[in-house]
Image: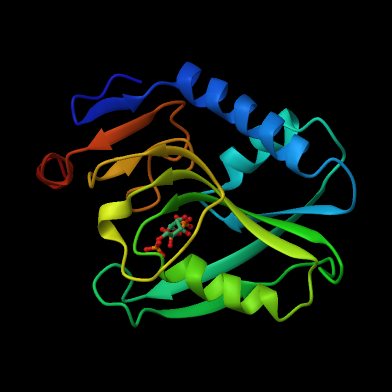
Length: 181
Ligand code: PRP
């Protein structure tokens, strides 16, 4: 897709190579046992499907919907579950799969929520991490790329629900986007 408002930050081949590495690393860290990969909708669905296929072992896949209000502006963002998991986490190794850690509000909340469901362990895999934006502490065990504080879209990430289907992670100039309307 050629769009002057978009600048490629991480091209598709780099994304895919890094996801293969993460899949191999996570498979080594969890060679046996019941491993649940939890996709946080919607942004993480592209990462989840590629990461699951990069795993060298069998995994469970489940989905969770979250909506957050006031996110990124204050640390008191209100988080609500809009779609819960289908499969019990009791006794399982859990891998929360996210496209991006930004303020940390979503993942900080989710870690506390899912810990109450008595899993054996919980770790986070995040494709992108913007550490400069953090308001709440989050430790992601597996990170694809640390990125600067720029507005990124593509490979699941959106601007007003657009651009999720780009193969690459791109920087979008929001001013140019607004002016084009
Ligand atoms: C994005 C992203 C994470 C969250 C990270 O989701 O997918 O879930 O924000 O932000 P935080 O660290 O500041 O909490 P979004 O709410 O945009 O929903 P979407 O995935 O459906 O686009």
